[in-house]
Image (tube, helix red, strand yellow):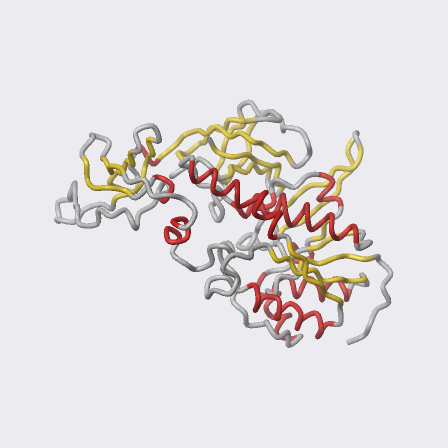
Length: 371
C-alpha cells in the first residue's frame, strides 16, 4: 500500500470496531488525510455481559487501526451519555412514549462530545461510518450545508442524523455516503481487515440483543393495569404502559384470546393501539388496518431544522420511523418549535416519542418528536 503524505489536515474518525467505520478510516487515509481513530465508550453498566460487546469492539477497532497504520485512542463518554441520552430515554418511557435514543446519541454524543474532543486534538474535521452525505451550496445568505440521503437508499441513515446543525455538518465527513454497502464489505475483505466478516450491530449497546422488557425492568417499576378493547372489554393485564409501544403485536399477554373471527375460523392479530396514561389502561385492537392504528396527520415538537430555519409550507415527504418508505405529505405550519404534517395516505402506528423527519427529495430538512 502506497503511503500518501498527509496534506488535507487532521480528521478524527469515530471507530466503533465495525466494518463501516474501519473502511471509513482507511478511505480517508488513502485520500491524504492525517487520520486519528477515536473509540467511544458510551456505556459502562454490565459492560462485561453477553449483551454489550464494547470490550471486543475496542479490540477490533485497535486491530484495524494497527493494520491500516493510524493512531487510535479510547475516550469514555459514559457520564455524558447517561446524562444527555439515557436519562431522557427513561423519562420518555416513564411518560408512556417510545423514544429513539440513536437520534439523541448522534446529536449529543457523536457530533457534540466527540466533535469537541476531536477539536481539542487539533482536528479540522471528524468522520463516521454513517451512510449519509453532506453537500455545501451557495445561497444569498452564504454557505448552506445540506444533509443528504446516502446513495445506497437501503442503508441510508439520514433519519438518525436529522438533528445535526450547520456547525456540526460543516466539520463532518461521511465517506460511505457515495458507496453501496456491498462495496464496503468487498473493500474490507480485499484489505483483509480483521473484522471484515463481522455482523452489523443492531440496536443500542445498553440494550443489545437482550429482551427489552427485562432491561427496562431494571430501571422502571412495573405498574400493572387493564388491557381493554375499544369497546371497554377487559382482555387481560399489562405490566406497565412503559413496556409497550404502538403497533406492538407480540408480548401482549393475550395470545389465547381470538376475539373477532373470519369466516374460515381464523382471527386477526391483536395490536397495541393506545395508552391511557391517566387511567393506566392499554388499549388493543384486532387487525393491522384498524382505524385506531392509522393516522392522517401528526404534530411534532422539540424541532431541529438542519438549515437553522423552518422550510416553507408545502409538499414534502416524511418518515415517521426508520426503514419506512418516504410518505407524501403537506407541511402545514412549520416553525422553530413545532410543525404539523398531513399525509396523502394514512400512516400506520404513528408513535409519540419517535421522530418525524422531513425530506425534499434526497435532502433531509430536519424533524421533530411526535406528540
